View 1 (cartoon, rainbow, N blue to C red):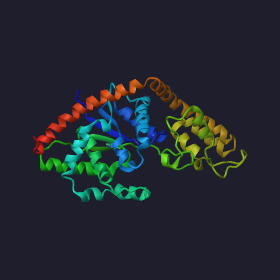
View 2: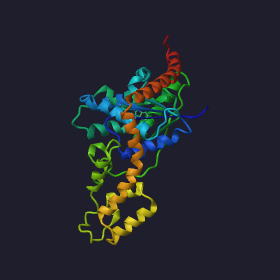
View 3: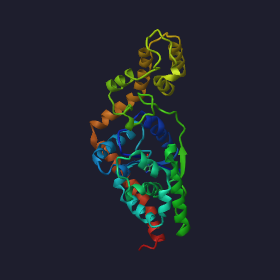
View 4: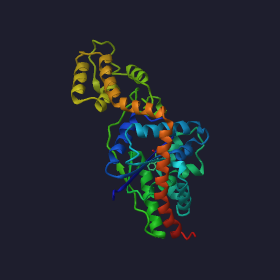
Length: 328
Ligand code: TRP
């Protein structure tokens, strides 16, 4: 078995929503057949910005793990674990901190951007500055070749490559330079038409019940100019249609678009089609989530097995690293 290694993580700072499913998880599921995949919940990363109120981390960690499985990650095919159980990541993070120039961390664009975005939090901490360094340790400790991430993570991957290169240059060629596997996917809008995000409170969560999903879609905004059913609408101005583009067949998209433009159907009719299609995607997830909720040991078993396997791989790397850095 000589598959190339893939690694990715999700930060435990909230529940997963349809945007995470379409934008990341679905792709992870596809990769597990052809690569040696490591997927984990980044709960330490959640503390870098959320240290003052860590109350959501545990729930979020469970929700993410559960959704990993519910969305189709197969623990027989890939290695699933929780970051904070892998103490070796912390060791590598520390050792890498010895060789990482402060200026490299300070110039990562997300550093200042996130501080701006979360102005109400004090992010002038060492942990927050070191966010991309911890992420680097997560990746290179498995000597992963590919990292499936969204475009927002590209600057982090860039510094990971620089740090791997610096280590290799200073000591020994141990680390491949990890590459981002950018996934092209349609932008998933939330129920208010903005990008789906937990911070906008516009998300459809994988943990939502069928009733909640139905309610959220039925109350979605549509083309604001279409007030009465007899008004013709413009589907391109309706977030409902944006979701149809992701979840409905081409024929259905054409049908609802035509019905909207000619006032042949009402917004509720159009939403019913979307609800049906989103249910079709979510039903297997709901089913699997229920199974896991009724059998919590299953999740622990999966995480324990994954931790053991990840630890073994990470320890192999760390032996080389300690040796290279002069440690006994
Ligand atoms: N920073 C990533 C995010 O916010 C999570 C993450 C942590 C990660 N460590 C990683 C992603 C390593 C890829 C590889 O989504």
